[in-house]
Image (cartoon, rainbow over all chains, first blue to last red; front, top):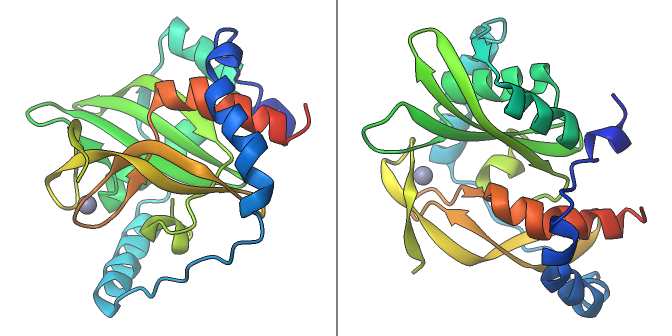
Length: 154
Length: 66
Ligand SMILES: [Zn+2]
């Protein structure tokens, strides 16, 4: 799938609601373009943890989950240019590394992973070996000071 | 400190905080700070679905020249 089609996920109503950030961008994007990035050092402890997580990811790289995708979610994936293999990749990464968010008392998670030039998010629930996909979305933006992204994992 | 969120960081087992100051870049451009979730312990950051649909996607569309 081309990068362009991956990004065709705009909701009809979103164009209007997005005017706030768009207006800000018009004023601020070029003005801030020359700002130098803040370089943050990664502590040895963080590096060690990330290395261990990468190893865990490699060990389970072939692991696949049985994805349950409703018609509604399939439509969202189509609209947002997110493929089933992208969803699988995010879930495998999250489950193998533990890099995810959760809701207390529920098997309900939100995970993200940088895949090529975009970051894919998957909200899902786990029941036994089944993973029910509850939401998917993505963005091209990057987080320059994010610990995961600095290590190329997010 | 941001407001607490329903989400917790699985690594740190603490509540994610809702924040308004996530640094984001599009290509070489530093964009205005974004709204999202940040773990107060490890600093991992997430954008939420509605915000991406309503704010980020239109901005990306504009910046990509489409
Ligand atoms: Zn954390």
